[in-house]
Length: 150
Image (cartoon, rainbow, N blue to C red; front, side, top):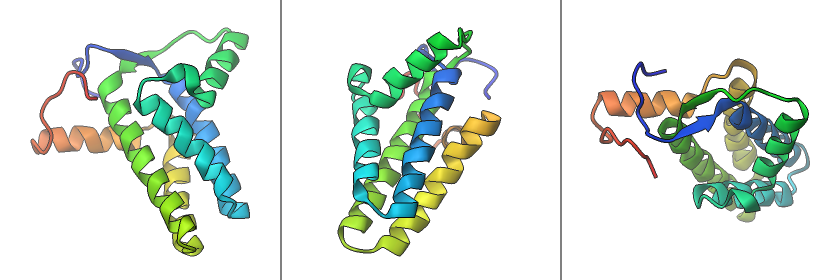
């Protein structure tokens, strides 16, 4: 994690981890059943969150409910790296869905496994691979030092 804020906006890492579990679970269901409905649900949810329409995100609403029930104390972090990771997740989900649509299920499942690994590492270890990519791209000036990645 960076030592100074990268974003003026903050996000609860507990919520991110609960959402990541749901993404892992639905992607696992797709990998096992090859039913594209599961990736359609993930695609819709990620799209709503990219558009900042969390009220339409079933995963965000479920996550907030779970955290309220657990009386979890929020743990805030910079939003920009998490938002970058969200875009990467959306890209991977679109790729998985497109591959499945064209009947390339083995390739779709291979990409789904990568998404599941990233989500699982976030859930278990609070380690965001997309965030690390974001920080690395900033080091190499591949992306500007954006305080509010949108």
